[in-house]
Image: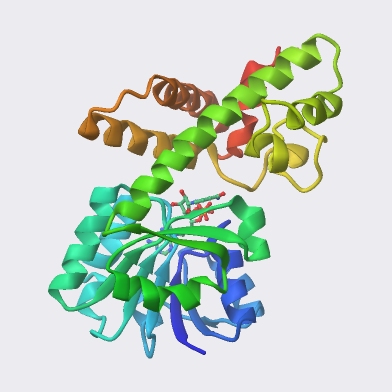
Length: 296
Ligand code: NAD
């Protein structure tokens, strides 16, 4: 049983924190949104009035925040957390951020003798709730070994990708591929249904054929083909278009830095940018199907 400070209780952080509580850990939580804090308190967490206050007695800090500037400001900004963390505390950041931002925080931590692991996740909200996330970690082996038993309470597959930032590089590669196959799946389903096919029947055929992929298997973008996915709930919850758009921006940065051509990743980035521009930023990213559909 470990005392954990958990910061960021959104679509992902909320259920992750609940799984840590179920595993017997003591959680002190902080989020700007009072509603999500109240939900965590109901699940057994202790509420803190600031991120700094959440650190009292904590041996591990976990953050699950929207983007790199928020993460950097939390840890290394003015009066950032690293000025309040003792050396025996392990920092785990599970947000998806630029590898350079993760390295910036890890280096600042290291200068103070603090261990940090970047541990972005894959699997979406369903896996966050079920405790079956994939964690993709970057950092020193010793820090990874310390983080692993904590991550085990929230995930099924825990990978060590390499040094600080490596978790974020692997995560961005994965999410660029996810965006590409989600858009491809939406295009195929839209074309097939416009030819009179049933979306469920077409999905079963493609799942048993060479077009099979994760979007078809567990996150079908066509409404009412699958229960309990955002497309069957007016694209609410899940993984926001705004966040996918951010990840594709990170992919573009990585591609430029490593001189790697990503023609499909770049096209996916433009499509999600357009979808966001059309006012769909807070809908789940599978709502990209609606952009392809004829407006009545
Ligand atoms: P979210 O917007 O639902 O949650 C973010 C939470 O952080 C919110 O509750 C917000 O109030 C809180 N917050 C923002 N700034 C804060 C601050 N300064 N201090 C304290 N709390 C603050 O986002 P999410 O979907 O939970 O995603 C979180 C991270 O996980 C993102 O980096 C995202 O890219 C990544 N991710 C999301 C999914 C998904 O399916 N939703 C999957 C994998 C990875």
